[in-house]
Length: 200
Image 1 (cartoon, rainbow, N blue to C red):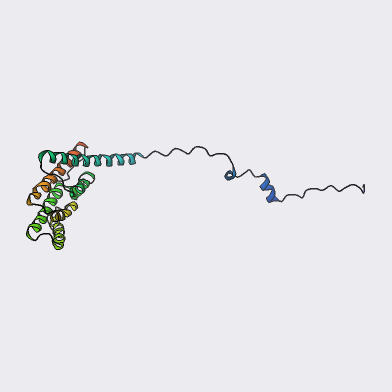
Image 2: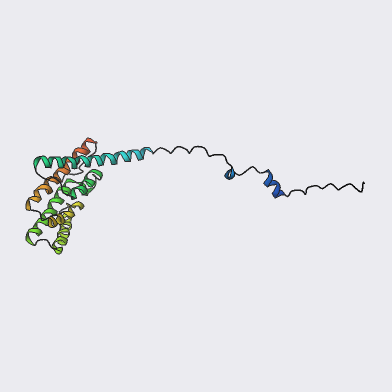
């Protein structure tokens, strides 16, 4: 061996971990390749479309009922609407099978509750206790006569706070309730659905 020659240095062997790191492909997270387009959103199932269409039709029925009540009231000079009728439309158009949405409940509940409010107003006047008593009596007597209709629970308050006259019982209370019932009947009849479940 030549004494002046330099020994050849060899690289130390790689460990298994280092070899795997060197040979492994680059991580997708570190890749600079841009992601592809997002997948298209899945279409709504048929049941969801049917439910949406039903809700839209029910809302449209309530829209027409309120619209024509206002137009007819303006033309005839007889008011056909009061605030609780908005809640009555929810029951009559969206929950037509409910016992609370039947004509006996809509017409009877509004007539009875309005009469209670008028009676208290024109005998005792408006007081905190008479307003509270009006709502309580409405609940009790509607339940007793099987005319329970939740929106009608607001009628005594409406009458007492507004200082309504006795004519309020006929219009808008009774006449407007009859209109809501007739409009709901026509709507569900056109849609091929049975309403009311019972008239009385």
